Amino acid sequence: MQARSIDNQGTYIARMAARTVLDELNVRRGTPSLVAPARATPRQSMALSDIDNQPVMWFYSTVIHLYRGDPSKGLIDPALAVRAALAEALVHYYPMAGRLREEAGRKLVVDCAGQGVMFVEADTDIAIDDLGDVRYPPFPRSEEFIYDDHVYKAPPPGVPLVLAAIINQPLLYVQVTRLKCGGFTVCHQSAHCISDAAGLAQFWKAVGELARGASAPSMPPVWTREIFNARQPPLPSFPHDEYREPTDVCDGDRIASTPQRDMARVQFSFGPGAIAALRSRAAPGAASASQFDLVAACVWRSRTAALGYASGDEVQLMMAVNARGRRMDVFGREIPAGYYGNAFAFTVARCAAGELCGRDLGYAVGLIRAAKARVTYEYMRSVADLMVLEGHPVIARKRTFGVSDLSHAGFDEAEFGWGKPVYSGVTTDAHRGATFFIRGKNEKGEGETFVGIYLPADCTGRYRKEVLALTTKLEPLMEKASSAPLAPRARY
Image 1 (spheres, rainbow, N blue to C red):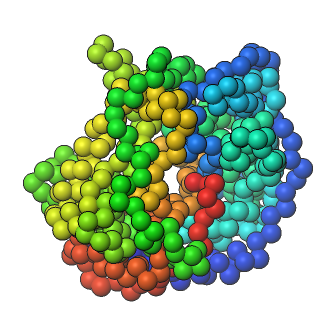
Image 2 (cartoon, helix red, strand yellow; image 1 turned 180 degrees about the vertical axis):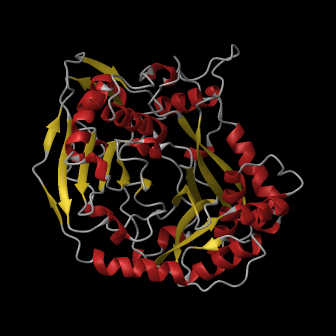
Image 3 (cartoon, rainbow, N blue to C red; image 1 turned 120 degrees about the vertical axis):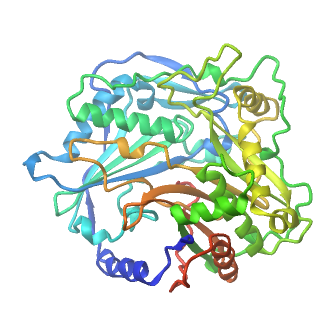
């Protein structure tokens, strides 16, 4: 079976039915307050790593968890339960309760003094079923479930506006919203420079464990940010194309030049049949390729063809690759278990558009696997060196498609005593030039990978055609194009 368009008629009707209820959504927020660690914690300054301290990390990432009600919980208020557990978790993760400041050389440091995280509880008159199909993003009316009241101040001279947005601010904002059916949501925004997806999931798993009565997190948190600091002197040992724009960039990039009103969203799910079809098309070298490799190759190639780049135009796929589980040195040491800082690197597969679209799928898979294999501990240290040596360069964007696989982040391990979440993950899966891969299940209970992307509206038909051609064996689908607005830049 081919990749399945999520813009098909049945799903579209279901989501439209839910939308009529959600149009009247009214969320009543209480008074926000700071939640400090439940007990005294060390007062000290703790430096972020040079991997943490990249411009691409200077924002708040957003995750939402949705839970059904549980009659056995009686009158227990989920907002109070989460708040109490959060205070306990901050005893163990006390840097999360601190504030960022900038030192010389744009070095970010957390001042830990138990300042606390922002918390607000809220109520709404909708039930969980009114939200419709929530197996995959975008989460309906997510803006109502997010407490987004950051105080943005004009930055001092020489300080980027985006960096000023996280300096001396709470590092975590949390909103717990009670639904009329007894269910609830926990939505949080956290400073990405403190934790990556895996580290953030580890923190919220700990909050859940403490809410269920544990005396301490099952995984003790580890700071040790120095393992990803630049060497002295800094000496990058890789070219790092991920921070270099393609050499032939001109003003003809459709993604960059198309107005927001002319962009449209397209989403496909890749189930077992689609994965098998992609693997057969990428043979003979794809026997050990992962699902990510195959889906990323399909989406990158289809997107490139749809955008109509010239044959000689350089295009690149940028991937966020987790370094956890990879050897740090010849002695076989790995990143410590419990490390909750940013432990991933960007890496790119780069080639001419004509090569990507004109050769078989195995060519793209090979480029992707080679790019991922570059991410070693030595590569991470090289990125840290580059940050210091070149003054924190930004990642490439022109003719660059960014993908990040959140399939194994572990957000669904946040359990507060009401069972597994119905949905747990990002509020949106796609931005103008990047997307997240989301794992879920179809109506048959089979595992699927959901991938949504934004394209100029007149490119969506070609994109669908390319994806379906690569994932053969499916009857024509009844589709309806989606033209959802672009997500805010500072959320993921």
